[in-house]
Amino acid sequence: MHINYKILQRDKVNSELKNITNYPLTLVTAPMGYGKSTAVKDYLLTNKISHIWIPLKNTEYFWSVLSHRICDVNKKVGRVFDGLGFPENNMQIDRLIETSISNLIEKDFVLVFDDYQYAEIDKLNNLLILITKREINNIHIVIISRYLLKVDITELIVKNLIYQIDERVLRFSDTDVQKYF
Image 1: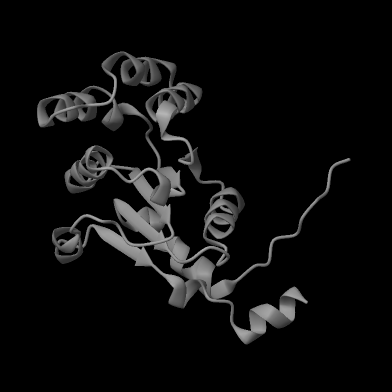
Image 2: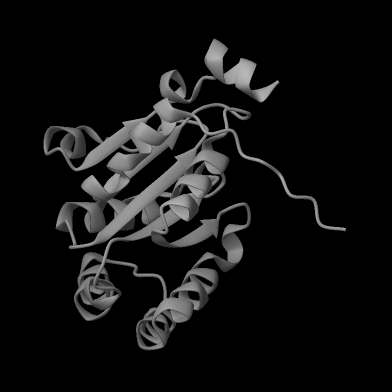
């Protein structure tokens, strides 16, 4: 039996999510139950924005999952990711970016890391920040987490490379609650 759920359209949240393709990195943070993942997923699907969704509840196979999801979009690039493995230093990160990421897709493409609070490690933070600083055409990263990153993002804020959506935006308004019930 398939149950079809109706997603509550929240204009304020969708208005903020429009900025995903205007920044290299969007950080969506709020406690559990604010509808972060649902809002982002619904926005991407409704607006037919190409994306890869990576749930990070199990980080053990993170790179393999990412490589396989990229293969679904571009087999050649996915194989490069798989062959290179998780980059361990700046030189490997540069090679990964130069040989594959910039060739991933020609139109806006979003890479979503959901439940980032389970996977936040320095290596992954460093990789995502370096990719963000490169401002790769058409590649946008969305990090969905229950809290702010444990790494300093001041430089990204100052350089206008990050867009932040937090619980103030995601909090259900009285109107949202009325529409829901």
